[in-house]
Image 1 (cartoon, helix red, strand yellow):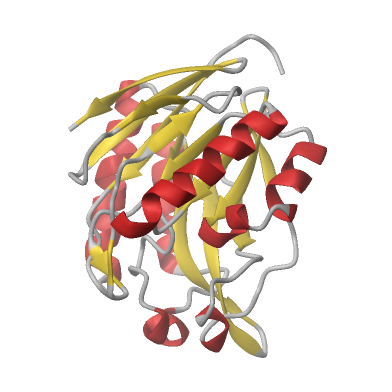
Image 2 (cartoon, helix red, strand yellow):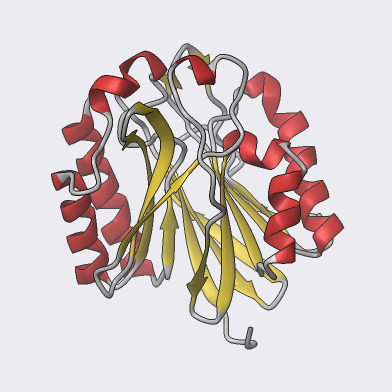
Length: 249
């Protein structure tokens, strides 16, 4: 990793239950706006393209060549920004995974599947089996989806893989936010690995979510936060292990 900085846009967006086309439009707006501000990466919350609607996951599951992925990839290429969006991903001969699609400006499209599930998620979803670390500039970025970060093995492996940044795409409720924020802060401090969170703001899957997208520096201190449940982008610039940032409403 060099001392060159990168900027991550943590998208705090509304989602509509099962309305993939409408949600995709919201994503495209956030992607273009993030890129215009100079972000290198934009991260959306867990299952952002569909909402956290587990009972709909099988019917809405995205296959590897889903047209929505082509649309996101085109936006990534045209805006020169890496995109991480959440969606249920089809799994051959199994339940769908709680996944993410990662689109790169060079046209690559990759996927990650959540490995550690909350109670009840296994009724609708299968588990992933592979960690995911990718490059943003010269920074190694590890991706976790919600409960991944609650299992100590996941961030530990990210640190073993020499990740410079741990990014969590999540759904966190108001009642659960304080406890989860402590976990994310602890991960950052334990591994001297900055952590960033992209969370929902809409009511989804029966949960009243809390927003408050945030980033913790390598000492575990809260560096920046949206401090709200309103739609916005939290722009976080990482320079080695220091984080600065601001909110774009």
